[in-house]
Length: 225
Image 1 (cartoon, rainbow, N blue to C red):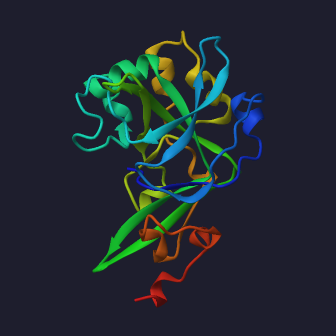
Image 2 (cartoon, one colour; image 1 turned 90 degrees about the horizontal axis):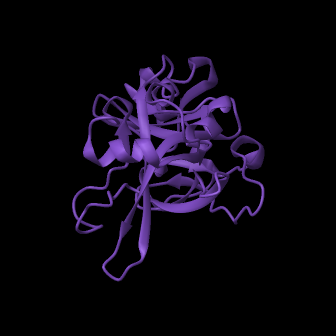
Image 3 (cartoon, rainbow, N blue to C red; image 1 turned 90 degrees about the vertical axis):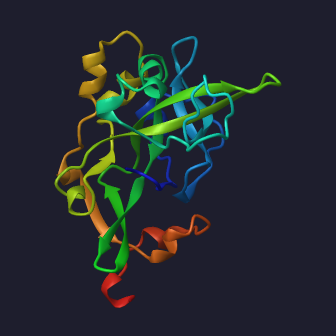
């Protein structure tokens, strides 16, 4: 799964995602946790990419209350066409979730060690889906979740799942309408292990309130406990 990620560098945002103007002020964070409002790139009505802001934690449009039940922060790629909360959004509401890396945790004996997964690209996009829940007073509330897939060989050393990181050539295709279901599913494969690096980071990241570049720096986990 993916329960925490970073987005602190938007270099190449326009070239990667096709969004040039207007590009809103993007909120950066080294430690994004569920429930936060995050930027997502969607296909607009005129079929050009646009940046919207969505709560991380999908609330399906048919829910009676947008705070009832657990937030759906992840959607498994193998259940996108089956689960009611996902299948319509997979067909109609796909989005890009900009990121620079993500965190994962691994139990080593009695210890829970924090890891960061970085990429050889400065800016990546997780494949995502979104939905709009309409409140009784009429305002629409956008929410999203990150699609996960099998871990590559590098990430598998700490976890068996990872976010579906789209290849650069698939970013704009992911939000385009008109492709086949198999075309979209084919984009949700693990990224090559050679494009990722996994290393231990400071356990301060365990707190959702922690912030700053030191959270993604290498850390000697063996000497902390």
